Image (cartoon, rainbow, N blue to C red; front, side, top):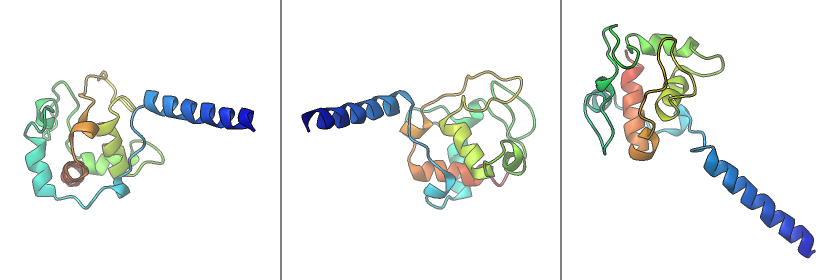
Amino acid sequence: MVRSALAGVMLALAVIALTGCGGSPSLTFDQLPPGDPASGAALFARQVNGTPACNTCHTLDGSSHAGPSLQRIGQRAGTAVNGLSAGDYILQSIVQPAAVLTSGFGNLMYGQYRERWTGQQLADVLSFLLTQ
């Protein structure tokens, strides 16, 4: 009895440790509240809660800076990764920027948006980018 209880505690601790090492649990586009594209456009262009503004590294006009252009990202995102919707691909790119890298670009993106932005802010930026 004591041995099985101890095994259960050890298993629980292992799961907690591995979850902590693996980063944030998965977040999907469908779990976010409805987004507002106008608010997202404003967020795209300003620093929020210590995060860099998106337009520090990304453009919407086809030119590249430190990051790839997001011109027509709403149209391209749905076919970027098999099995990911456009919303989930863009969300993953924001909250797990190293998951899929655009050819020609390294893993330079700020990696704390999920921790520093609210779900509403993420939803707003996503809804804006999906219109691009």
